[in-house]
Figure 1 (tube, one colour):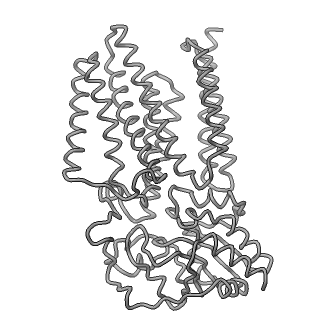
Figure 2: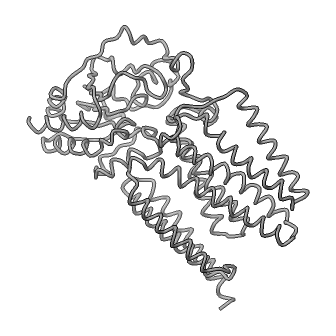
Figure 3: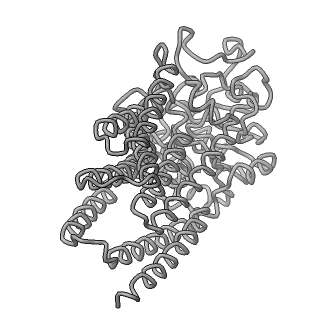
Length: 469
């Protein structure tokens, strides 16, 4: 039996890793995402069972107690958390993953230190990397959660000598690591580098604005995977290394996709404090002058007539829709239009919400059919044949200045080209600018009409008016 266990455990790990990869593939589409999540969960169950069969596990009572407590808390959170709060939930889980990985390194260091054992060089390097990545992930994710939850300001926070202080802290960490490589059993230095890693996580996220949260969440998700992989090297567990590497790689790929969708580099997202309100109040709006432009406003009855007598409607949800929790009202409106023979599609911009896939998650909660969801690249060629584009709470992601004004800070950013539709209705509370702080040319175009009010109330009124047509 003892000879069989290592081989059997590795086979379990191989099957689990295969399920992880298959699950990730399924997560690439809204239509298969739920199935992919189940497949990956089964893989994780197999990995846990295989690990528990390993004879290195000494205290099953504490492990089972932890599993029970974690399962209960997880079930409660999954039941209680609303879909609109999913970005905060993802940020929180990223942080807990980073903390768990860092604690593995801390526990291993303490075990070796308390037994007066000399820490091997390879284990020492793994622990130091795990503490750095896990610590940054934990405090960075907690701060991202606080920003998304409104516990702290979503605006970029900067202060004098911020970058030199970051550089000094990083140098302190590297200096401490260098010392530990020579004197690996120094507990005070290990505690110091652990604390520095936590501070670096806070300073990493505070200069990033709320509009850049999709990128931050993707990057921190990648960090949590890298921390798990480092923890795998600390305890020499192949499954943990594989799973962490998969999460780390997929998170980096998603981060790159998010940056490309905003036409910005990762460096500018992390260090430019984009969207910070300074003495001028907003980022430069380019060459446009909003005071010389005219806005055409309509009421819900007029909007309902435009929608009800259209042949095709494309609904463009944005962050404002998420804040208003208007997804169910939108589904009701779409159902009414479809009963009248109107073809309805949904246009999804990669950074329209507060995390990657946020709009897809919210619309899925309202049971919007997956086949009606179109990515930006797929829907843009269809706008010219669209009778009405209905923009709900979106701003920068539909701003034509990204294509026409080379002085605009969003110039070059891929957008949903709703201005090419025959008519565009924009639902918005007022004329405030978006995260980029620039005026939206779309609002003043001849084919655009504004429907002012809260997204949920306005869409509900539109649905009611459409019923009466």
